[in-house]
Every structure is written in structure tokens, then in C-alpha cells.
Image (cartoon, rainbow, N blue to C red; front, side, top):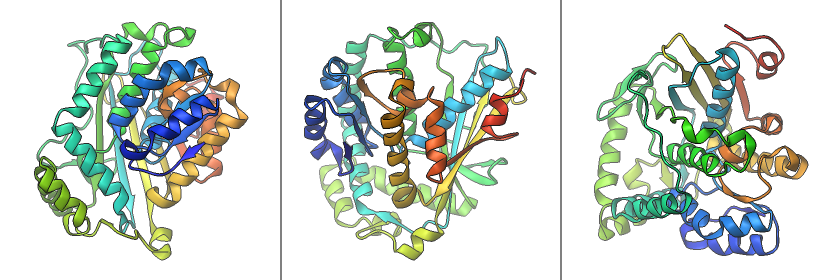
Length: 357
């Protein structure tokens, strides 16, 4: 089942329940962290009992970020024996994007409002109580390397852009996948994860100029202020184009606009210095309407054709947990025009050569 209708907080649960009852694997495009948590709490046990995979966020939220971090960590561990990944940095860049559909904006409004009013924190607390996964503190000796913008954009040489914090679901997905793998320590390859800290994580997007970054911050400030209140949410829902400078509007982009759009995601896994690193990129066509359907189809085909290569027979999870150790998923995505590459060589070249440093 490919569930492509959102916002999922309003219409997603019934499809999840039906898929599990029918013993049919389920994938969706959801980028709503509270939905991830709620479905995990309610249905993970049933999905595992029925050997059904329930995998959310099989879209631009959050496939490039999750799978670049998984690939970067894998390559880092193959190059640097006995070293730990201390920092993960992910930067999304976009080119030629005109606008997105207002449905995505509406989901963001509801999600932000839920986060501000404590609903997201409450669902995370319930997940923590169920999974009983203890977060291992980051050692004081681990350096802070990853770019971390706050109220002001910072220049990023690798992408030649000015970084702002990315407020999508990517960071939540990466951390949730890590949490799920620690929880599922019944699988041998993940049994030792519970004793390891998660790297420092930075999720950003690049703006082409400093002025564009500050303009984005201004619109973001208005959005975050209005989304705190019910009346503000109603106003945002009513005028998506006005409050996003036309970035989201009813009807979405034209075919010509879609043909010009593209994205490139940069990921760096660092050890104890900037020099001890692995860098991975993922690039593809326009992310919302072109790359996203290709991604969910590629992931669905991976499940259909390589079910035994996935570590879990069933459960409620995200792409990083489901596919992070499945080599075939990268091949499926490449067939759909979404390509992953290790900066100083192709993924296959690195897998077939001795990369010890």
C-alpha cells in the first residue's frame, strides 16, 4: 500500500490499521513527526506480529537526509577503524524551484501548532516510556564541527550558500530511526548500539545569498508567531501564498516549472577533526512532485524485490531504520534518477577497494 494523501494526522491512521490487518506492507509520504510517534505507539506490536512493514517519510522528507547519513557513517567506519562518527552535517540545496502545493504548507502549520502546544513533546514522552531507550550522553571530548546556524545565517563553503536551520522532519526522522534501532536490539547487528552516543546532528538548508537568507528568516518569524495561536493558524491556512512569498500556493507549480527544479543534499560525517571525514551527496529532480513519487516507488520496489535484505520482518519505522543497511535501495533510487555519491569516488568503487587510511 502506498498512502499518498495527507495531512496524515487527519487521514492516515485508518490506512495503517487496514494494511496491518490485511498483512500488507505500507509506505507513505508523511513528514509529520507526531504521526510517526503515534503510529509506533499504537501499531508496532501488531505490525511485528503480522510481519508487516509500516514505513513513513518515504519522500524528500526524509529519504535524502536519512540515507546520506547512513551511507556516510558506513563509509566512515570502513575507512577509519576504531574511530567514531562524532558529528553529522546535512545541508539541502535547491535550484530552479518556483513553488510547492499548499497541502504541504497546511501540514506544516498543524504540525508546528501541535509542537508549540506540547502535543509533539507528549507523544515523544509516551514513545520513550514504551521503548525505554536511554540516550547515551555525548562525551565531552567530542568536538563541535558541524555547522550550526542560530538567528543568523552562516556561510558554508562546500555548498557556496548561506545556511539556515532546516525545520522539516529530517532531524526527527534521523533520531527516530536511531532510537528504533536501539529498541530493536533483538536483531544481532543492532544489539551493541545501546551503548553508543548518537553524533551531534546539524540539519540545514542553503540560501544562495545572505539577503535571501534574511528574507527567509523574516517570513519564518511571521509563520512561527502566527502558528502559536488557533486564529493565526486559520489565517495561515487561508493565505498560504501570502505568508510564504508565493513558495506555497493552491495548484502548485506548472509542468514547465517542475522541469527546471532540482535538489542536492550534502552530508558530512566527521570524526575527531574536519580532516577525518566522509562526504556524501544525493541529487535528483524537483523534490516535491518529481523526486518524491520516484522515491516512494523505489523504496516500494526494494521491499517487493529485496524483502529478505531488510533487517526487520515487521514493525513501524522510518527509511533509515528500514533501508540504511540495504545496499539495493541505493540501486533502486539511482534507477529513478535519485543518485547517491561518495565525494571522492562512486559508492561501488569505495565498496570494492581498500579504503583504510
